[in-house]
Picture 1 (cartoon, rainbow, N blue to C red):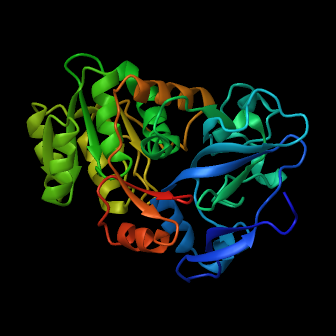
Picture 2: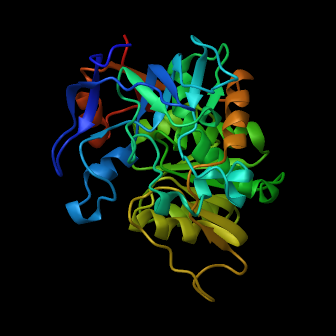
Length: 352
């Protein structure tokens, strides 16, 4: 590869501006790195949250190539890289850590306590991301073979699958026969969470969202009951559970009203998991939350959990609804996502 090689990428270039398609230098892999030719890249609400931050809240410099859900074929291997072949189809594990601490040793790089101080950031959330023709991956341990999985439907699983999987897996002991799980927000992550709950647990799944078409998708992917997410939603959930509430509540919106609904849906000893980053915070305390209820705010998931999610997809247990876009149409995909018009997940195909 000559140093003159160029590629197209979608970047967030200045605070408050819309993302744009640009031509930039194509990276080359240094020792220990892997260059991917991107086959698919996911579009996520987290990107919109980042693009909504004021300048002082941005933890990394602009311009930033977007995209923290990536899949591709190995285009080139840096010196010393083994275990992968050029042309192999892989998914990228996004929450990169230091690789050396106790959390990273367990594959929980999403919880690496040293990443921030070392300036290690996920692709698309600080490091150059996947909505580009090529993506540089810092270490082969951040690649998971896709095998015969379709990268287009598999790529959202690296976040929209992994994040709910991690949340649900932690609460699995509570989701016994006769239990109820509530899913608030049935979009990109929520519609996957419903499928995961059905595949992994015997729980009855109640889905909440603000519109009938979103609830139709929730029913389509396996929700037993659907409830319009309004001020009466928690009372309806209590009614549906004989006054007890749900053993696990997963809020994929995380806005102040949904967090209030989430805690109000909880049974005694329930898990309330706030996954969405809508700025809400739960009130927790004696007399405020049910006895022994626990509230968590997880982040992404472990490398092992990503392998498990991809295995579930291989077994046909989870299927992401996707809308595909060309690289040139990626700004339009973000616009549609911002206006709540995407059904399931938007996926960019940078190389056609």
